[in-house]
Length: 233
Image (tube, rainbow, N blue to C red; front, side):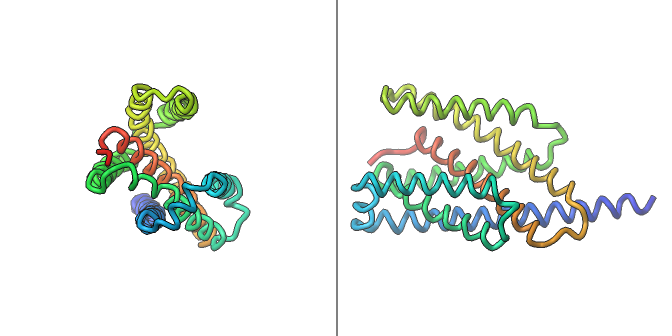
């Protein structure tokens, strides 16, 4: 009878340590992204280099996509240090491209939207962590919604409809709130299924992959909220 609570305690400790590591790396990524975005936005030379040259801008976008796919698909074949370096590099490159928001929106609205996003993200993540309901079906539905958002966003590049952009943003908030809860639950379940004595490098790579997933949820949720709540210069 006493061994069951002990096992549960060990499992809970393992989950807490893993989730803490995921959040720590996500916070590092977000902090680096914010720092780079702010730094680049205050450098006229760098801004001209990135946004005044389509080759450089689209090169950065392609580089970011390549890093995301590389980490997601090959993280288990990498060294833990390599996965960490690629995640940090991605966060920095993303900060460079996201610096454009400082040219579009007021800094006060960016700040207020960030805190609203952070509160929403934390609430969604806590729900995903503590709920006993299986969110798999919801996650699949939200992923379908994500595909719809991507398609609608591509179409709107040519249509340039402000109404469509606003609708996509509202739907996007719902989608990424749902994905945050689902991804958090998936990370919790992954930590619970880990065997005792697992190699530290393997745990680190899992934490980096989890950090990247939640980082993407946060950034996209922030951008959707900014389109709705942001005040333009």
